Length: 463
Image 1 (cartoon, rainbow, N blue to C red):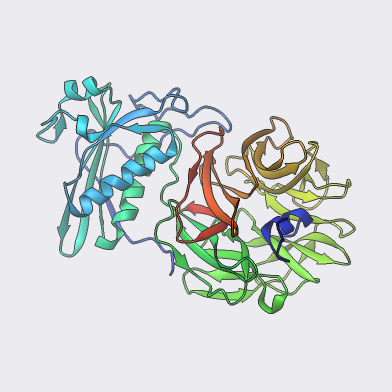
Image 2 (cartoon, rainbow, N blue to C red; image 1 turned 90 degrees about the horizontal axis):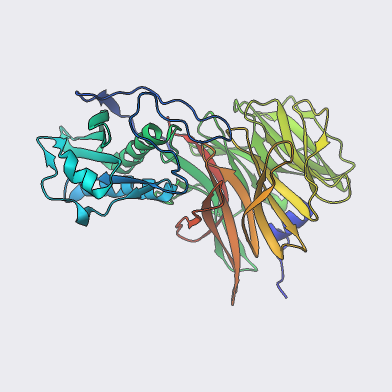
């Protein structure tokens, strides 16, 4: 029988408890020709991707039939080849694109900087990405162009100038641009994720606060592991994290400033504080304050002042999360006898239950699109834990993934992908890994991390 540590994630779920990353400065310029920097139309909430304005590229059915796209080498070796690989990996990982094998490219299919259209039509490509890389005065200049095969024209052309060590971020930015022009939503590749890095033994775990690029690269550790850290949360408007630390064995919510590398206690409320979530404007926090066997949801300023209690503590009320417009809060409560999801107004009024499954619900997370709420569910019927989604009114409930233990769902900036952690039992205990999956329940992928990892929080697009 598996023995749980006093503060294991499974136990916390069962009870309901629960500049370091600054982007590089870069100059951007529009290349000549038919290039455009016009922003595409936004997709309607919960609907199909909208086509970019005046874009000749058709993307209907991209979820079931990924868009074939050709990405030519920016150069054959060095940083250009690395940027090309990042762009290809990003688009493939989205599940909406299928990059065409470069080995099938017809030789000399780019003539005088322009595609030889017949050669790309033969391959079935809908889009072509071309580019070039050069160094000028210690700066990296990266040019790229996106072409439509159907209209035989350039859709976008942009040049970026930045420091050489920012090549990976340039790749993500270009992939975001391609995604936006061809899908109609903003991309999510130029973003970072806060998470908990796990090491040590089952009896003496070391859990450190860390951040990484969305694809698991550029990991940076923010705490030394001397005090256990859990449940980080990205501020949507500034370079800041909230997280729970067990300094002195008493869980409290702290703020970590990603620009200065410093952390500070929000305040000491009740017996313990857990589950921090920022308001959409990033100026305040929701958290749960435990006392007398129950817990209440409170709102506090980032300095710990101005506390407003939104629920009572006669039951366990935890893991609150704002709607994108800040008007509603979804949370987890056992006020009806078992852990279920409720929605209330931002001032704490009008609480209404939205989950009715035969089991327990926890860790709700509202999509930035506003159309879905992700959550963790477990019950006898499913034989384990699941990551699910439902509409804010409780309808349309469906499972995305399940396993021995899955949890901690967080949405990417455009709401099309969910990241979560999966725990798998093994001979020497259990280990957590972070994965992503589309909101359609397809394209599940493991995010590589240096050690076991859990509790992801997907940050906003970098400025």
